[in-house]
Length: 255
Image (cartoon, rainbow, N blue to C red; front, side):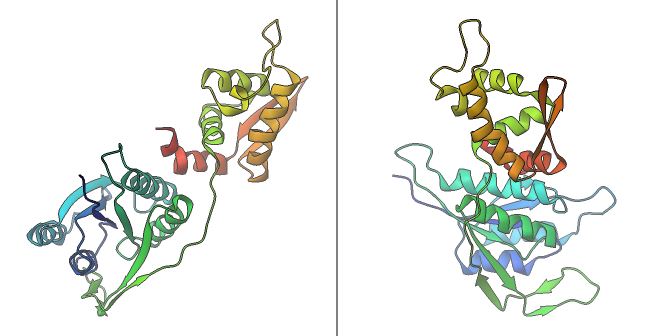
């Protein structure tokens, strides 16, 4: 029987102690380092020390690419990891315990990590307070004074079919008729659960349009993720910048 692992997700920023010490203190089985270095920055030598010290402590280390200064990439990567690690693959597998260290990356990554924890409900965020902080040098913090569990609150995201539609709209605006046919091709619930989505001639029915509006378009408009514009006799739906970013952040649910 598989045994649950304690998995810690940690941005690999300008830190050493605030990565290594909580992993050791709280007996992490595995650390997933979110790794990204800008082209104009030389990788700090202590990054190798982080990996070596975790390895010496018996902690397995994985790395994932993640832009630590991009909010939506941070949300997407942390949410995808948390969801995957906390969900058993089969009946013989078990859910892992997932923790997210919000102290070791950028402020943007901290915000993204917190949002990912609240949206998925699949990971526990925490913050590590250093014993002392450097002044103009790296690593930024030294030692670990305290690791603080942070409270989370339920936060919903667009549902899977809404994200699928946002992904389609990210490619370009669509008419409602085109979205209904897209929903049929992808077997999305607003079409699949419709009693009669198409008439005898193959045209979408009023019921299909109503279900598209009620289950997809109206909820996305309320979040300001899409706009609807009348062009002649057709209503065209377009993704807003916020909608395209939501697709980036939550597109992992389509994989």
